[in-house]
Image 1 (cartoon, protein in one colour):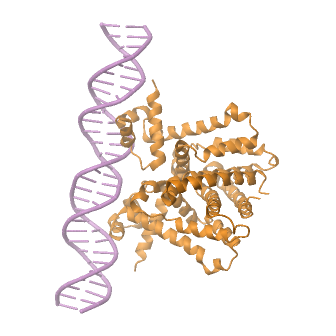
Image 2 (cartoon, chains in turn blue, purple, brown, yellow):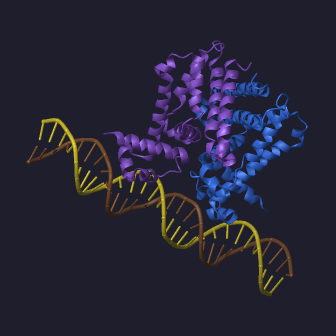
Length: 198
Length: 198
DNA sequence: TCGATACCTTACCCGTTGGTAAGTCAAGAT
DNA sequence: ATCTTGACTTACCAACGGGTAAGGTATCGA
């Protein structure tokens, strides 16, 4: 049973998302699983590689989400919408992943030199291609489409990682209300971008 | 001379932005200043308070930027534009601050309970009020204006913190090109929001 | 001249960190 | 019955973390 590996990844993902790479210790993750930290080292060798494995799994999942059959039957406009809706973090799992990816964006500077990998590239490229097949975007440059995707992903991610803070600001019920409102306006923003800001 | 205090804040701001609260040690910051870590503890008491002071200074600077005389003479539309342009991180200092604020957004969950403070609130509220005085936004609800501001700030911040990663992806020259392109499209996005997504 | 205060250092403390080394133990394979 | 392999554990370690205690030194007002 290699389910243990996945359990470790689950726990690590949650904790890394919450507190960042440096904010989490191996012992910390191990504790929540009821094992010793050496169990983690047994499976992943080093903390760095454990972190890398977590990111790897997320990027694979993201790509898979784009390549679902259900997804492929949709118009490109709807593919974008559907993906961004997920990114906005309906489930707490989604929110965790957004947090982790933003953290990676921040910390990547140092790690990139060593790891040499960047985990979001493929999925961003894929999204860019999707946008380019949308109506009105055929003749746009790659850079233009990439920036547009980046705007939408950025706005969604930024909101998604703000959960805890917004709750602190407006309480649980205030947060729910603002989330709903943001969802509506994010659709409007997508419309604006899809029509090339017109 | 209390210039030392500011020097400490400068160094701490840079390092916290680069590597996050947990990723930086007091000794680390002290080293870049050529002093011992106890010098920092003398001035700020604890690491936590040093971090808080850094955030405090940033939030004050942000608010000041909104209240400049030069700023006050502008139309609200131009105030928004000007502020978001700065946020997009022309100077590396701006980018550092964006990084720090996003980190705070991520880490706030735990700290908020203890510190009880949230450093971006005032400035977000101020921006929201500015938007509400823009043409076409008078009758909008606070929530709607807040979400709109959040979208624009989010998109800009997300791009601003991506610098290192985008450089890794496309090299220095590629990054310059994409930055320029993003700047243009961010103006378009602001236009779209100002016209209430129409 | 004396004391106080601000600023900083050396010396030290102890819990935590990621990581190594070596052993245990059950499940298969031969 | 033996060997191997994978999945752990206990035991240990050197380095580093934030923080305390105490002392030194310069400045300054009385």
